Length: 421
Picture (cartoon, helix red, strand yellow):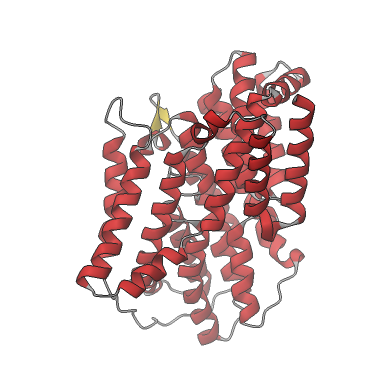
């Protein structure tokens, strides 16, 4: 049974790499096969899926779509640009702004919100929009690991390790991952300033975007506040955070339909949710549950532990391998698979798992910035540029992505070890 599980798992991952358009179908089909073969017990299928994670992702996506539709992000970006002296600082501020938004909103959504402002600046000054939009993309990817709701991988870690919103800020009396990411962002911003050192053209204020509706902004702020408050509730249901996100999203839809009379628009918001990613995660939860039941995860953990019994070596290997892997494959299936491996490895070595968890998340989240295909936000950014007639070569992307990523990852690598070793 274990051999069958290993073969099926390898075939599943190979298929995910070879056929990215069909990843959700592949994951669900593989999950079904695991169940039909009896590798994953049928009575444990629903328990294998982390419904809190699924609901958090779905609810957050819906609220973010309402937020984008309100034009508030564009308004904030316009106000930010008004206080910049030249193009260099405008591009850097846009990257920082994208990073701040991305700490609370999906990375792809952030790129879609902020990129139009960079395009407007480029058109007005007759310069290439490529560097600015790449900077926005890599900055949004960097901040995805800063909070519980910043990225699907953070939500996965929160669900697996039982971390709440505030745990990303202060955990066990120590600085959480949020501060590590900010330190990396500061160092990486210095890299951007050096890269954009020649962009000294003055810039005039852009027209201020008019906000259509302020209610989505209250929903987004309310979600953050309620997730923080939920962190203080002892013995709360496991799906608390997911219910908060889904109920706030439902409130936004009902208001759009009942108050605004736009039920068709409300249905359109539902269609904007990335059901592909949700289906992919659901299938992967069952697949990972299956290989765990078969003992494969325990075997992988033992294999890692045989490499070395030194915690620093294992920590370094997890982080830097995650950087390299995430440069070429989607980090969601990778993190979903590695979380139970890291748990088992920590148990075998008798160490605190948080060090390895944070190393995994930092490497997997930031590593996507090394290449143009390493993160969905990068693909979205290049798609925007392609529509504008700019074909971006991998080398052109990596001139910004590689120094930015290595600076941020190295900073995080050192700080995580100093804080959590």
